[in-house]
Length: 332
Image 1 (cartoon, helix red, strand yellow):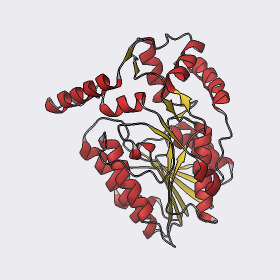
Image 2: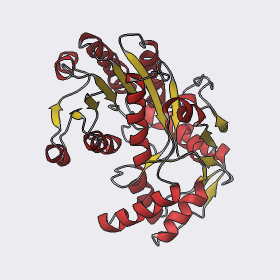
Image 3: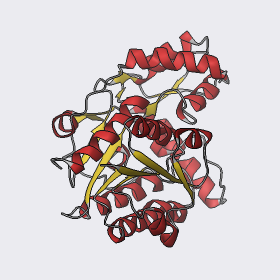
Image 4: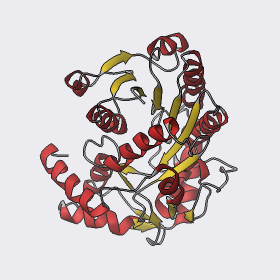
């Protein structure tokens, strides 16, 4: 592995990954819709464009040996056609561009949501089947794309899919700022009984996992054609973890609660209302969000440790201390 392209490299995980790749002395390029200031300072080549543009993508990937595909339409609400266009058609374009440019390795960023059902998932591994009924178009499109990537694995193009869970850390533009904003406005309510355990992933550990996966495909390729869950390897009680974090920032803790069944029904009604009246803004509650906040979702990382050599180097406690300092400096 010598020349790497990061698709979606201007995002939260992408920026951390680009810094890691450059730090290892690898020639690195980024394909994204928007530039970011750090790219020029790092000496990273930048291609501005969309993975939906097949010709642009084929030209941008020429001369590289590895692609790490982070580009995605995220979120739990939106036009299903947009999710399909970016996450499915875009990924098909990535695969075609890789084949045309004789790229040896493709690492795909998937999500644990592809196996979410309505119930708890406790310590399960990658043998867990895909969900039968997806709770939002985002995870449906990611599941289709993940299957495409893994099915494309061959002797000439080796592929792998990583499923990092709830990535957080300095530089986060979504999860932590959103939670802090809702907590400060006292809009956040506990869903369920508050006993649910969830996986989290510190940003540096997530970046490590992508580098290890790419190196594996260029080496023993024991991970080729397989998906892997990525996390801290130690689930946290979601609501206790959040409240400890909020206390250390003098942010109101979450005290109000609503039952899972009531939240799930309310989410279904809100989704129906927004669909009926063609509302584009995300409902404040959806079925997927109710499941995510009320049910246990934690996964074994045994296979990632064995095959890829993945072990979280930054502990959850260390990560919390670092992000507290970052929040203080950035005045979130």
